[in-house]
Image (cartoon, rainbow, N blue to C red; front, side):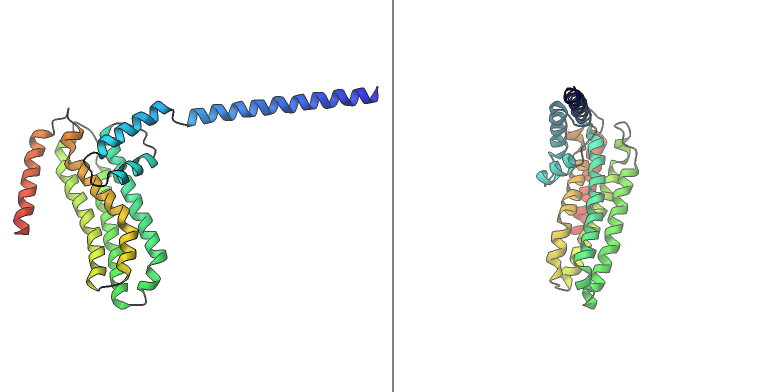
Length: 229
């Protein structure tokens, strides 16, 4: 009898444990299902991301960076805003990496040290210009009014980053190769963001940007040519 009782207890315990395991597995599956985007969402996100990345020069960098950021919307303006935030994050990460991998070597040479300090300053300025873009409310009804501001700020951000590279180039420092490598992605992302804003009339074909925006673009390009000549 004692032996039969022990067997019955063991069977009851085993059954209870098995039941709990089944419940846990089902619960994990349900939670995972809720948190994971389905194939249709991924397909829609990918299509929207490729559309806003179409006018960019660095399409692979554009698509990968936006998809890695797990976009919550397929709206073009939200994706462009996400591009600004991704670029800010990239510059911050590059600054940290440069500080860890380049700064100590730059400190050994007065000119290189000065160039690195300049880089830190202008990269922060580049981030500030990008944050101005993010801080603007993104709305199809309002975008035409400040699209030129976005272009100016994005162009400024790119110019600041180039100033950093030029400062190392001028002193013929071997560190220029490391700096180019570290900041390559952030420069590509900045260029992509500018391309998106410049080509808004294509990305947002149903907006009213085409008219006045085209005029602004022609004026801006004309001014640039005059400055270069």
